[in-house]
Image (cartoon, rainbow over all chains, first blue to last red):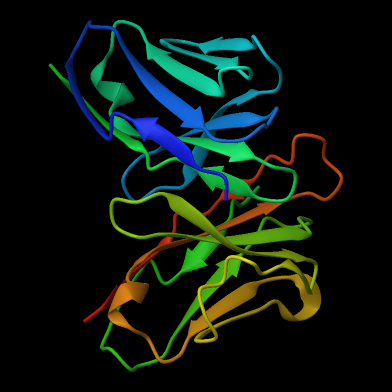
Length: 109
Length: 115
């Protein structure tokens, strides 16, 4: 079974700081997603990464994919309070998603 | 356009009771997925419908779980009888058939607590 390891599980960071969330997966896949979930809300799609070396940026978030290393990163630049949420990576195998455990991010003023 | 909706948002039941969760996908989405997140763990796939047919139910934990999608619209997930380990958040997602990226739209989830 495909394993997706996401770390850290919990992240508390100050506003204005940078940090990276890591997502490792155990088998070949060429499609990786990042989702955000606010408490009690739906998972919201942030990025779809389709190929090796793919990099996508939206505001203070930047996601990258290294299919050879089976690693994706979500980099947060100059964090703001609005980014507080739980972030999930998910690997698509062609017929189902395998999710990471999620990273609960709290941005402290 | 309305998103994926789920009902109820929370359910607290006793061990041995029955609970039915409902998911209404986005109109026109033939793919419907159920997932579950047990506290602190990853979101796990349960099953996938294409219209009213079960395409993949490999993630269903055991035969206490029954999913239906009559008429290919909304879906229900029944747990009977519920056990303590069934507690968690149950998510539903839908997507359009044939889309290259298979972008799934998730509902807010139903938090099930079995006491």
